[in-house]
Length: 320
Image (cartoon, rainbow, N blue to C red; front, side):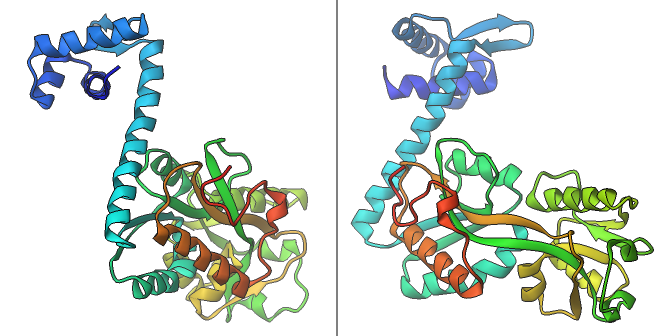
């Protein structure tokens, strides 16, 4: 089985048309059709079925597409590792991070990495896990720093960093900020600024927890005045209004705004923040140093997450 035939197959699967794929590749249609027959003979199975909407991949074709994606990522790793061996520590490190985590964890770590190795180039993708996890699997990023999901695919390795706590936050001039003993029912008269429920993220899970906690106290759901996935907008709006928020304590502290945490028993929600990367894939030297700096920063910030809760070896990047 030739790698070139597999690459051609991916183009046909994407365009659903041999003629269009041949034009993109720069190959004649007969030559491309011959390549597809060669693959089908190798696998002893049909890869496509013709429909009025074009060519659709069969179950065997879907299997080949999945393996082809893994091969593409592996070849990209091979090329990058070879370049980095030749050039020493120079190269590109691609990191994905949730918006809130990028705000309070990454800036000084990026500065340290760039200062230590002048040849390093960093690319930081800031988005939700719903975007970051597929990007990691497809080889678009080398690692992500985000809330670790309760369950994950076996092709990923997780290294826990810290346990982050979500709490109620208000402006320091808010009427509730002056009260010493707060109860959940004290929150009812006020409106909220919360993460949008339309995007899958840890912040949405925290919003669901807050809603359920209020229900458990026989209280109505939060009355939402503003929805946003921008932590910067959220914190600045809270600081200048009487809106309440439910946000990461790390974000509240790093924002350094005129806000105050409202301590109310039974409402806090915890998430595990950590590093995720593809198991057995190539991670450049800069990636290993980046991970080391993240652990050092987490240790300074608070008591780090207990690695024993996950079957992960923080000292091993290529194993597991």
